[in-house]
Length: 314
Image (cartoon, rainbow, N blue to C red; front, side, top):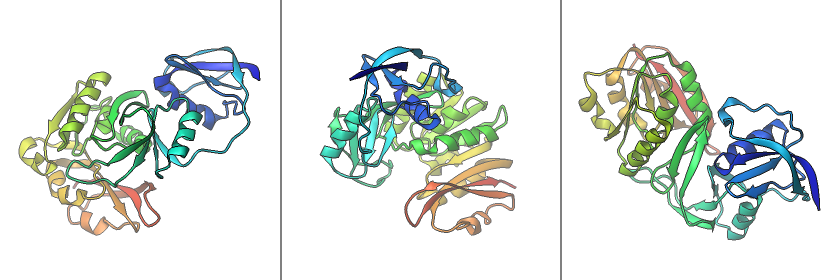
């Protein structure tokens, strides 16, 4: 059975961003199936009078379409979405196939087989359904990224945190990202910075970083293949207004280097995993008497949370 209804036609590359917005805003018609149309998706919407946030872009068309009706089925298993890839916690091929069919914007379902490991901070993945790839395109607040999950760690869960830091910045700041990965922080912050030095020890991550800088035309970001412990030698006597330290499990060993490169009055954003509020304050107070604000970014496990300390260097 088909039903005539308003629909919004968007490129598949933007499908997941639009899907999330439409679901959250109540504009989605849940009893109708989206349409796959070549390189485009058509989502059923309540009416043609819809206002979209700027970060979704303007590449869409609204019109009348014939949608297939559907009964409300069960929700697929819990998963994380990164572009066209869904990452499941369980090694369940049947559930992965169901997930693939229920999300038109997904091209691959993966199972994560390991925690982050090794010097390059990567994970092992198994393909459960869809294309045999760990590579995808991802859009975050109108920034475009090429991601390869088997080559470099990436989490979409810090998207709002990156925008928070951008909102704290002043125009013309000098920024250092000590563990940049594929570049989500420097690309987000490049809109206000005068220059950003973005370093990582993982050659695969830096290669993807360079590709993402080109895609986003972030000409004020300088990529570096480097061990963060060596940055003091490479970058001295340069000093920075803002330093990003997003290596939650082992970043304490790099605090001395970060403080040596921060300006007086500069800010270090230090990310860590902790079990108790204020757990890292005694360590941080060994480096500065300046203001330290603590914020919980997200839950990490039943006993730990991902926190950030915004540290003023004095």
